[in-house]
Length: 290
Image (cartoon, rainbow, N blue to C red; front, side):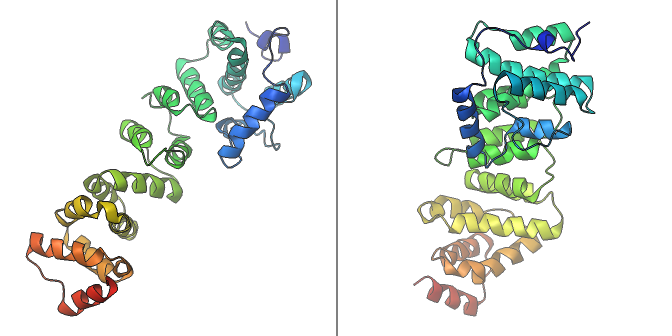
């Protein structure tokens, strides 16, 4: 049986090593792009390893020290093996495509497949290889422990307003968000992609949060004048509930009146519903849009 406490049983003692000066610099560059926290940092914290920048270890001595910290932690054997698996992915990376150190460890230790999938996905996230990451992280067997952080990273690193990856992850896993930041970022991405879908998402939350999300949706339409035609029509054509109708009109004559498109959206809504915004309100919108 594999003895986790034996360093040589986990890590190779010869061949290319990932934690030389060049490797450490590369990892720290990735960490900086994630505002100072990698996914492996979060995993280590679940084991109680909270030392600043415990990863990446500094050379062989640093790796041996990290190995001892992991072995001495209160985590389960599977959690410890998962971290070792991640570290061996670093070794495989510098040794080339034929290296299978992580897979060999997983087989020798009977590490459950879901842990391998999760750690490989998080490893790709930390390397900003987001498409490869989602091939693993969207697997239905995985827990949603890091879902908020995954959504935040994917939205913030979306290129040219292409939110296909965070939305694909959301639609596949349907996570329940634990933080307002993840919800707001995902909702913003969804609002820029589909006004209707964003509206339906907002309806799953309590009224106060729902109103805030609805106003964020309206703002996303008004804030992009080059798209306000089709997106404004989509917003104006939505089958709104009574409260949503009131929130729309209140926003158009309130915070939204600073946008020159507020009057246009209000007029389109009038045409769709046959209901008039109060003349005084329209006059206010007209003045704001000049």
